[in-house]
Length: 283
Image (cartoon, rainbow, N blue to C red):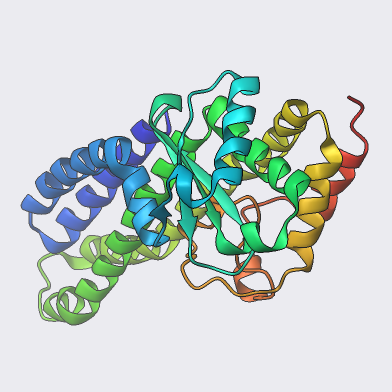
């Protein structure tokens, strides 16, 4: 439903742009490009996200303890062993990605390995494995690609209107008032489109985090492990250079901690609420 909605949304943008620029080829381009983007986001969105995060795959011999933790939790959860990646960042954070449980990956930051003890680490890994088991990561990863595309399309349209469309229309009276109204509607739509895409992103992410917290605690049978990890994450103000607004919702916690402007549209529920829910769990 999400992919279909974005497909319709992009084609609608293409139709508006084609009418404003009086160029039917824009609509044709929007249809073809939206189809390509949907296919790309389904099959290759995980690789795109891992590349954006500068994550590097690590092997068993490089960190046996981490591998054993992931293996044991996978056995408990009944999941295949995902690929494990390391993000060269000192902030405590992690995410899961992939199109299904057989093509999944978990990425943890260097800060996770350096600042968390074993029970905390188990809590973080169990949370990410729960995203895989709950089939969250495909949806959340596809959103990265599609939201990014909407933002790029909006920026392209506004630049085109500024440098060409509005000037040409200034000396063209054929469209009259209807053309001016359509151009204004296009500008408003281009400005609002990234925010619409962001709202979809927020709606998807927040509820899935609570579910992954609960599911992860059932795996370890120790909710305090994840609660303690989240408390350490909340106290960690280390910046994260590789994070972006497109990928923020994938992480176990908001990577923009301390940046007030970027936390206005938080993709995660407050950590305090998540810790409170975990402390109150009875297992």
